[in-house]
Amino acid sequence: MNIYVGNLPFNTGDSDLRDLFSQVGAVISARVITDRETSRSRGFGFVEMSSPEEAKQAIQRFHGYNMGGRDLTVNEAKPRR
Image 1 (cartoon, rainbow, N blue to C red):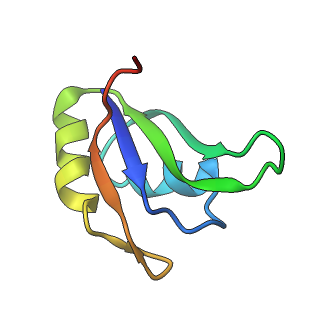
Image 2 (tube, rainbow, N blue to C red):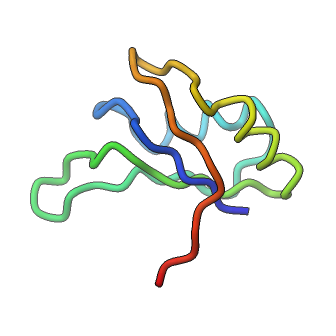
């Protein structure tokens, strides 16, 4: 299950996101979205967890979690249109 993670500190990298969500379960992938031209973080990313149960647990645990002075927005990722 894919999870959207918003309001990330701009210095957060893929490994930081993976490390955080690994506290809940197995992370298949973790990616911070960057601007194509500047390569700077856009302040959000996506994490794919190995099971829906772990994903739901991660959403409950990390929604509102303070990371680097910012409260994260964490919810189920919506499919691209």
